[in-house]
Length: 171
Image (cartoon, rainbow, N blue to C red; front, side, top):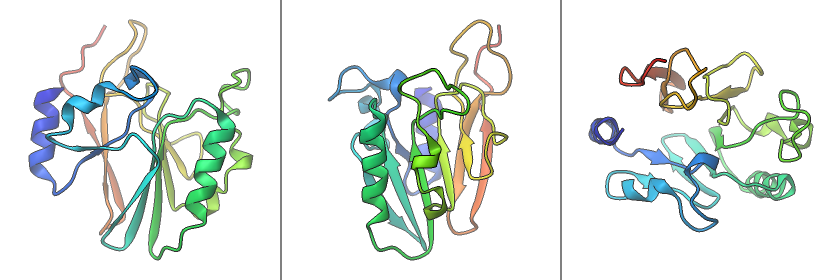
């Protein structure tokens, strides 16, 4: 993964990582901190303006009410152009029995042009028109199958692309 991240960091002006639940060591530390010299790691709710777009970054937040408050705080900011949210959550439609699941009816999805999220290990765009579950770079369990990799967003062209990780082991 370090080799792949090194290549990606050389290809683009800025590469950003946000910690998700598997990345957290404690409430203040995560394993992505080792990449701080190659990439930007956002461990707190943050936004960045880039060429006609505002990118909102929301690392893993365990409590749904704290998640809703963080998203609401983004909505209060003035911004022009496209708005993209990068966050880690799973929704109540797909995991209804989990108390940590996010009720998307409590989130103003209309504010964002696209939402990128994680938790599900397989990449999919089938659950919602606006929400992309990005998946993981590697298989996390033996029963997992399918393509693994990462998504790249071109804010100038308003285009997203999936890049498969050819080094992900297949079980």
